Image (tube, rainbow, N blue to C red):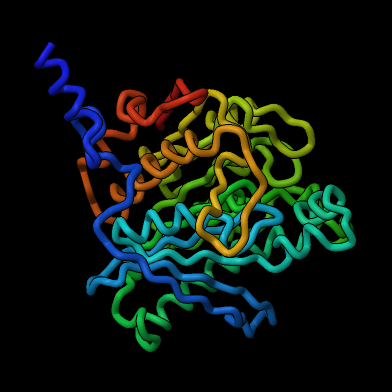
Length: 340
């Protein structure tokens, strides 16, 4: 009995989960926040606000770009950005002005506005360009803007997004957008759009990754995936257009094989469980199992980025079903991890 108690204490220590590092808790770095409200892509004439979470300590830290979903903003993933900053990353949270909270709430026609923004050809094709612009800004600010000067490791870059942001991250990773559902129809035609992959990015994460069907991807869209991609979804993660959660699960079959692609499937994970604005200036909609889902998201995301942006072999060891089981809790009580 004494030995059992000792094991239990060890498993639930603040920085360990049953004998392994607890990737879900905050790290050793103190995070700072700086906001750039008027960061403008002069070529496109588009403002792209950016909120930066970064370690206050001296150092050279990999960069992660976060893209929110339809109707989100700079703070939709505040808690996750904060977590990554405490773990030694500089995190740029973007605001896509054509699909942000302001656009969602205009004229109080939320469902119509949501439908319009995810079919808007300018927005669908423009979001990946926002990410590439943010990387350009990071390179520039790393040479000229305090307190970011010489702090960003621009040779090791990752991108993360949820929902519409997952689409954005997947395109940056090499998937090609479908043109068939874009509006205005006469402008875009059919088939696949141009390659918008950003070769500077080494790893991508898609929370609620998009499956086959409108308005984002056809089956052929997935074949050109070439950057390592982590997808995380769940059994209650319903998709736009009435498609079931399994649409996300089934699409993994078509992901191009990089040898480093991973798909995490959680029992009872809902769509909005993958957002977390805790601590931000704005607060998102309530969701049933957010706390439980976020624990797994933080752990898996950190493991994946550590593997690809910090060359951490130990993190790679735990991105599997057994490695993520210790992070399950409450109704989120089962996990399946697939890889290819």
